[in-house]
Length: 128
Image 1 (cartoon, helix red, strand yellow):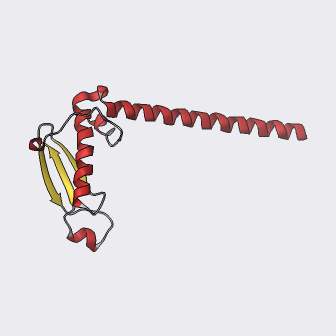
Image 2: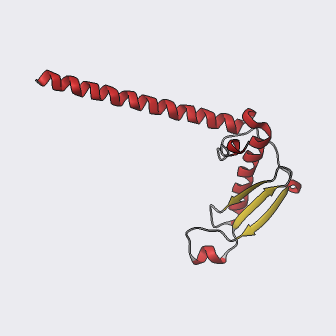
């Protein structure tokens, strides 16, 4: 089930499992990464744990604690939905669809490159 959790992070999922505040454990810690003194002195990184499943999310995307709390809850909701529903989850289906789209785009680009190479070769043969 662990690889499925990596599919979370997608938006536009409306049919997710609901989380209650009683199931959540929230902490505010110092974030890491670039930012220097602003990062080192403020506890605006949100660590959110879903107690029944044991899933933990750490969010430090903005300076605002409130925005980080909201983002952490969205990500956690997607991961919990994926954890319980597995391949039936909307998040998983979206991820699969986007991967398929990406592969198709890559395949078309490769075909175009092959056509261009072939055309160039034909033009060079015509010149000789």
